[in-house]
Amino acid sequence: MAKGIVIREAHFPGRAPIEAYGNGGFRFADMSHRGSLLCLPSGIYGWEPADPLALTAADFVKLFNEAAKVEILLVGSGKDLRPLPAALLAALKEAGISADPMSTGAAVRTYNVLLAEDRAVAAALIAVD
Image 1 (spheres, rainbow, N blue to C red):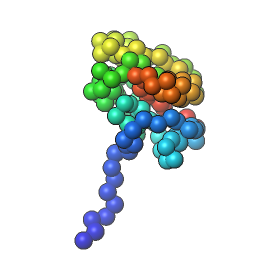
Image 2 (spheres, helix red, strand yellow):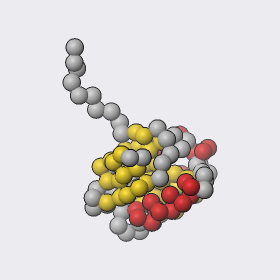
Image 3 (cartoon, one colour):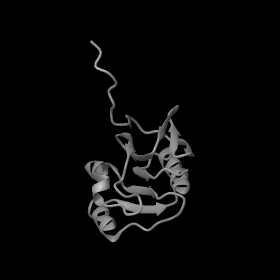
Image 4 (tube, one colour):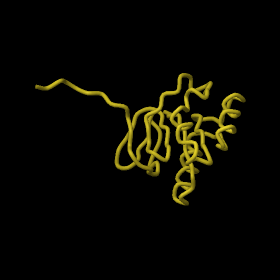
């Protein structure tokens, strides 16, 4: 008996370059996702930070769970560069992760280069219109 539509967490179980961004989402691995993304060694996840303008360590629980596999976190903060809050930077430093905030476009391009070099990179990408 059919149980209706099952909504699951958006997740691509692998690493893939970001092919395109804009219009509120991203395209990667011949798929598209509307909304923000968290790209980790374990895969690409749909990501909804509580407040994209004021990120906190709580927005990065999945990242901290994989901290041993990540050296660099690229944070695409939308159309403009926004500095990361001091408390978040301290939590990332304690986990051994270097964070680099930039616009989402710059973060996508940098992520793709570092991914192609097989670097231990993660990216938090806030969707842009």
